[in-house]
Amino acid sequence: MMKVGLVGLPNVGKSSFFNLLTEANVKVDLYPFTTIEKNVGIVVVPDERLKIIGDILKPPKLTYATIEFIDIAGLVKGASQGEGLGNKFLSHIRETDLILHIIRNFEDGSIPHIYNTIEPIRDLEIVESELALADLDIIKRNTEKLRKSAVSVEEKHHLKILDDLEDSLSKGFFSSKLESADRQLIKDLNLFVLKPCIYAINCSDKTKTDSEALLNLKDKNTFLFSIALEDGLDGFDEDEKLELRQSLGLAINGISGIVEECFKRLDLIRFYTIKGDESRAWAVPRHTNIVDAAGKIHTDMASGFIKAEVVQFNDLVACGDFHNAREAGHIRIEGKNYLVKDGDIILVKFAGH
Ligand SMILES: Nc1nc2c(ncn2[C@@H]2O[C@H](COP(=O)(O)OP(=O)(O)OP(=O)(O)O)[C@@H](O)[C@H]2O)c(=O)[nH]1
Ligand SMILES: [Mg+2]
Image (cartoon, rainbow, N blue to C red; front, side, top):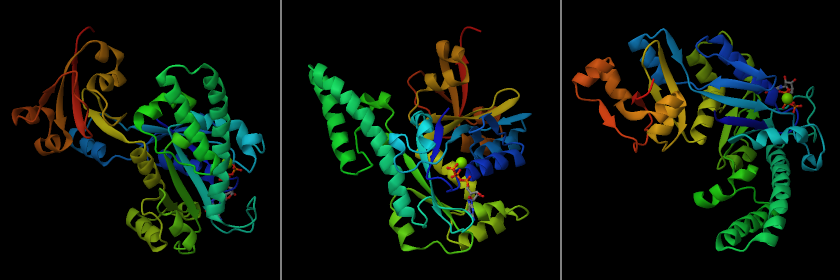
């Protein structure tokens, strides 16, 4: 399962956000939330298509695709050198696929800010430079070893990738434009700089959010939300919630919008299975092969894979069910080289029960 790690300074609202995710999942019972540990939770990804499948087929059970969220303590200046609580947990963020960086943009005298003033860009830079320093540590350890042992062209190329990355991180650039083959080469280092990142700005529930600082952040992947506002939205209907968020210049979908954004940034797609008692959405990386996708459902389906019957969501909805879709000629037979597409509804035929 894909994992999202929450990072940010202390008192920016990471745990409050994590708790809101929990509540959102509990309130709608279709959205089960599981806490594995205190700070690790499984969150379902909102999915209109699965809802529609549920309405049409009325299966006893609907199962949504999920993402795991991890909440760690806040990072402070010097975290990479062991300062503060967050450092201890940085290794948990190494194991994630996406960083959700929560940034404080709300004033509240009763909630101290570790650097006293509300300055989103400064805060972003502090946290990213700590992540960069932690990456530099790892890169240096690896280049030292490689410099001694690199002989082949491949090894020297590997070393060059790391040297270039070290150079740009040392100059303060916390971003990387590595090609995917090069990325693959250094994937095992789990560097923060190679992870996709979303900046979630926790705004005040009162002020409009068009300050210059935030506009400057806009070219980054920015999501504006307000925990204080979301906390007070119980009892409003969905349209009213959208309007309130919009009037404050926030993203209209609030917390569930962030989850969707994470899904997008992870470059995941969804396919569906509708056999038996359960209709279910599965999240896989784009370009996943059908056999690997089948293996997610059951390992036997991958090892005994024969073929798959595939219908696109829209065709199934138009026809009403799998049987009618077949009559209408919408079912495709796909072999082991097929790459799964977003919205495919898949029936795997496999041998060896
Ligand atoms: N006024 C206001 N207070 C908020 C908002 N978001 C969070 N808080 C409060 O800020 C305090 C800190 O929030 P947390 O969610 O615990 O912060 P954190 O980022 O998890 O902090 P650490 O775990 O220490 O790193 C809590 O008292 C929250 O209720 C907000 O949007 N507005
Ligand atoms: Mg916290």
